Length: 136
Length: 136
DNA sequence: TGTTTATCCTATTAAATCTATAGGGTAATT
DNA sequence: AATTACCCTATAGATTTAATAGGATAAACA
Image 1 (cartoon, each protein chain N blue to C red):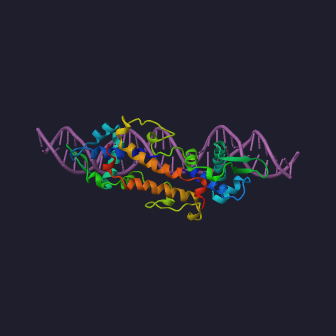
Image 2: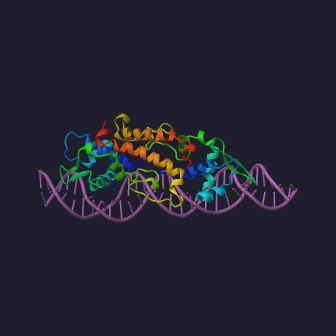
Image 3: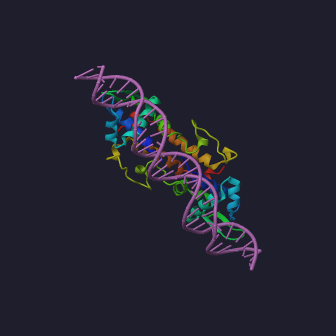
């Protein structure tokens, strides 16, 4: 299940990307427009800034804005920052690999085999779509 | 993230499917072979029996066994029974649909648009693979 | 320079979900 | 009758997620 954090983060990025100009947008405006708890959104935008997706400006007329063009923001990196691993089990994760406690041999594991295919199919979608592609 | 329940359930089904005969296998044997808590596995196998994947036999020589041939058990149904919805958000789920509280219009939602693609790609994998296909 | 605006940051709590265990009941076999 | 092994409910512990609280910091503007 997609976390609210990821959902809200995506919505916020979309809202910023659909803006005609690149002027800073206040948290309050995004929160109201997307029906998100303002304080919760605040922490999400903060992490998106720290990971290099957003810039911010303090004081009057301040807010958040996209640093890069929406077409240069692939979904793979957005999902990994907000949601974490794309893989459903750590043993098939490219960026968050971890061995299973049980399971002596991954190559003999049916779950590994299946989840490898699922990961690849999800990865293909995320790699083929940027923020610009999911604008409505 | 895939739940342990799904992981263990899949492993148990695989273990039963890889058996040469269709004789009942005891919970204890599966639990030991797959490194699963026996009591936890017990509840998982119970639900797999109730949903029609397994048969069981009590008393000495008893245990669980596959009712159908592994090649007739599609991953879609296994995943839905063990894990729940295949979709990552309820608003794109075929079998567990639910409208989002926020989001006045699904057709205008970028998350919806993206997750629809992800669901379809996962669905294709699950539909094209039966229990027989993931045996190692 | 002081007030207002709005982001920045840490800590904490509330809620939900997942994982596992406890403890006994029931049915079949020998 | 004794043993074996599944059946079933309830509950506790652990982890994760979602949200809130409360103030610190920095920029704009009169």
